[in-house]
Image (tube, rainbow over all chains, first blue to last red; front, side):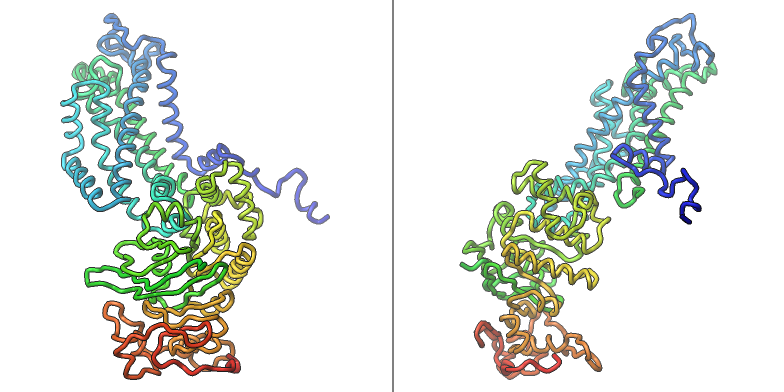
Length: 300
Length: 329
């Protein structure tokens, strides 16, 4: 009786309801991690605009209309128009699709190649290790962007060029990371135990060791998405990547700079902001994933 | 037929400073369903013996001689793929000390268990899940359904060792090598794990090689005990004979150095250090520390020879046979 008097009717002693299911767990993790949530929100927004942008756009991103050239931001053109009269807002939104495709392909390519190289080098050791890692050293001897420029120049301009060039400069980073992780994890007690209870070497490598190395790789990949946006835009900006007048953030900045002296700041500022926000989003998400993916560091 | 017969096993580690002879002619045998204890000090080569048997030695270690016959088939020199397919897990499995570190930290324990069942026993996902629950129940884990969803770091040491044991048992091996299975667990948990191992042995008829430095643990569970000193078997015999009447001076000293209830004063220790394996003493490796040493000990290596029924000793001047248990021992 006494207990019922103390606890007011309707109040819950048990606290919030228990978290159920994978999605519930994800929401729970994100609530303890507002920065990650912001990152996820930004990245989600970019994905959404990449998916729906071209459909919802009010203007044609390539609709040249010299009568409306270089208009300052207004209600009809929130980001203004460029020197050909194309709506900058439409082009920023539409460009997200191309930029995202380039970035994700480049990161996926470099992750798959780099992780495979690094895992094999670390796991098998000996001359595999030496041969593979020394070749990565050679690649890393060049300044990153200069190397990307060389690759892009050799391949000629185009979307594929941007993807291959930005992927190429990132491969050694993944290989090095993966090799280091593999070297430490293959000496661990659970690797020995896994073999002792009957796992084959290949199963050990793919099912036991690789998953133990994945958290840093996923985090690096997410962070790398941010940097790759910069590099892809950079290549297009100097004319080695995607060409004018394609709606691409780097190209748009380059176009805006042609009008720099006329004071048409909106032509290059808004694509620049889009790059900055996208990089920020991926970085926040990458940092947060580090906490969420590690079973020992996540909220319990 | 004998289940496992190890003879003249030699394992060396090749270091920059030379060859380290960690095992120098180790031999013993295990009958089906038997529990053999392998006891010895740190560095005597207990774990290396286990790793040599199932081919888990890491560089720079290598088996340089001898045989490991598993039901007549020599495991030394067997190809890695053959060991993987025919031996490890299926015939011989192993559990380790520090069980939490022996489980994969990023996969739930249930998945680790079902993976093995799916691959090695060809079960479907659902069958594997059912079987996993059954196995985990058999090692006395309460609430198995929810436990299987845990990650290793969420388990207590005793719980993790139970999971490790169920992993090792998942393919119904005929020999379980337990390498210091209770080290790092608290005393009550140690007792429960020992009880569990005993029970499993009764139920499954599986043989066991128990590696330990804890004589009390060996006494609780073993049928026979082999004493290892500096890479050689000093003495091997039935548990009760060996403990009651040790014939090797090292076994005797080892038994005398146990902490006991009612012990007054300091614990008796064995003078000197474990033999340097890089430059082992000539003759018997124990002779510099041996109270019974005679002149022949520093010249000739004693062979492991039968002395009492079921008991063999490698000593030129063994301790006299004792008929009675020492009072208060």
